[in-house]
Image (cartoon, rainbow, N blue to C red; front, side, top):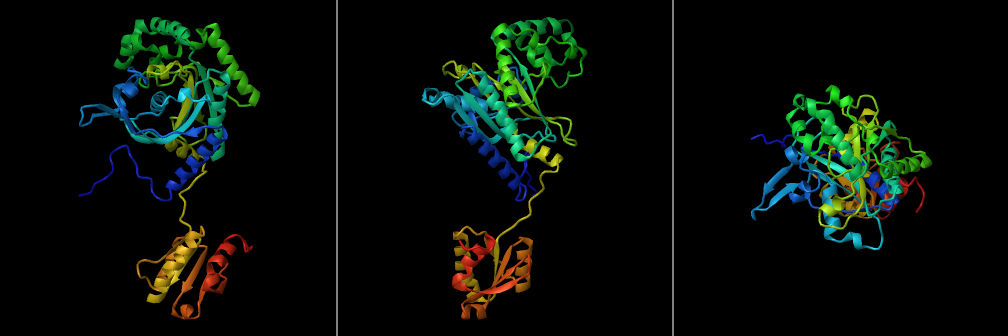
Length: 428
């Protein structure tokens, strides 16, 4: 039987996994610089966490969630996105009551959506995201935008574009909603079934339709920016002013809408502009979501956040030739010849590792030539040969694999010698 992984999932093998570790480490480093702390939530939640927050008119809720009943007949869903889970935890653990506010959190982990697998779009994918809850200050919007752009800068991507829009407050959205209904209603029969259903429930979602994106009415649809009330317009102007003050470039796109129903005011995406990336250029999306926490039983709490797919970030890195599959590399490989030397090498290997040296040895009873080949495959910086003669004389032969230089070292000083050589030959 040839059992393979489910469609839309992937195995991340050694060599490739180091790229993931690099991205996650850089992203966490930037988050800590901005005083964001990590939160980890369950991979599955009660289904209503997502139906109450993501929105019942979204593709995620209607078509893409992995929902099942457990043995207690409870409806559970593998999380399709991270914000709702963080908001649930924020309410459940009363993080809004902590003295330090706003609550600034970051997370990363697998998400699940049942959609057609394609390049950069998987059924199980990994998101890295941040949420800042508890502040309605436009400055926190600018901080979150600066944070995400810093992450891309830290991993080496430079061909990006920050795209902004404002979805306004509830009053502005309602005015825009009615304008959209009036715009699309006479010709709604020309649109897909999903758009026809969304017309009255949430016409803003029509603008995000992938099937009807080329319809002429899309390009002439009323802009939300024309329906912002004075308060919403002032808020958006302050966000832009903060970005201008820190010199963070951006582009305004009045057609930008996010795929989730809980967004208000600031909405944004980061786009890849590097050649060879593909047709779908969105790397990251996010926005402000006043009202989400309240929907889950908490107090009225403003918030803003973003999430990006690590898979798509890796695609962007590869499109700019910034990463490659990493070859294995170790500091020292022990070549042991004879039963006594093999036994002694176990202790020697342990001592190397205890000092922080990356080391390995043969476990397949290979001859000397085979062990040296193994050292080459692992790109060992040093190879140390221990045989019966060396044991009897309490020494070990050490070869620098880069220079070819070979020296004999007392066994008692071997570990310190390797450690010193790895530091550049300096004592310490």
